[in-house]
Image (cartoon, rainbow, N blue to C red; front, side, top):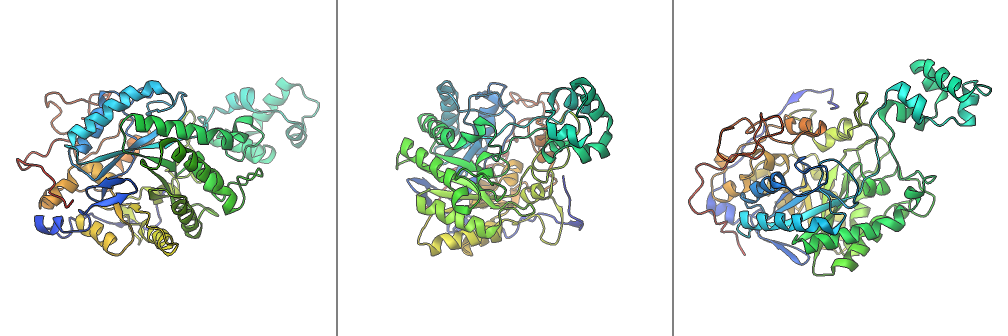
Length: 494
């Protein structure tokens, strides 16, 4: 991962430890309404991909145990990982692109509801993504993938060569020669692996995205409703299709790119199709970027405008993130795919404990506050969820008190200790296992390994019934809270 030039070491802190009474009277543990959906309190576990499913994208026992463990900590809401809306192979990621997935997803919603005692609301994040290929061996690229256009052959001085001769000659040019004769897109495919873009209007399936995606998202949302989820989160963030439509890099010429108004058109049409399918009594929101954090990318003024458009359209909640783009990702090794969290934008999404002056805690706070303020000035009361390095009660409560957001998301801290909110509510914040922000979990995700936390994944490996990682070296869920009170009722205000 990209690292800042400054190497300032930051350490998480437990902050002020609230009493049970103080916690119960706080904003963090007060209820909030997301359109038709009421959360008992304002703690939110954002979507994280744990690589627990199988090659068919099905709910299995590992998936159920993963989310049930978060649910036993009784957060206000859990958002299930990015789940594919197409019925296409996508590795061990959950899918919702066909009705055959409903049965497994119903098992998941029942398990979470039982594990939380009915205290936690469950949403699912639904996503579309474009094709990306692994970085090829140069010989494979030149022999099998490179299109020999007249323009390329002319630049290389190979107009009279046979196809076999031209391909061999191009391969022999080496790195310097490739940079000279290949067009930027072919050079990117050679150096990083081929990656589709929403700008590829020469491809029929890219041209037709505005016609196809509203229906695909709407049917996925209907399956989510039928599976027992309390709502859906439309994935409009990071390196994926919908975020790419919102990005300033979207320069489509078909009415869906270029200006802000054109870039937001498809995201709004997707939302409208989803709303028409699931009705007004079902929670629908989105996650989008407060800042792309790439050169010339979407900035806060764009995102505040988008946020207002989403709120006016009627979304029930908005959740912000930042960065995580392919545009500045590090070059992958041959045989590996580019990973959108390795460049500066990836660092902004998941900063480490070694950081610059801004530090790893709350980097998304100011931008989110600007978005929420613009939404309020537009006369909308849409709740805004902010995530990013939040790891204690004091920090979360300060964000709410300042009006930066309405709900506080904690991803890595919830992974480190799924019980952190419950412990805090019960006056036991001193027992919270604090995330150290080493990004051990991110390293596993980058390698598509089952994601765990180094603070607990080697603990009690012989515990009866515990499920282990594929290599047998790590437990897949956090240990239970050993000295938990006999009664775990939340006692939150209703």
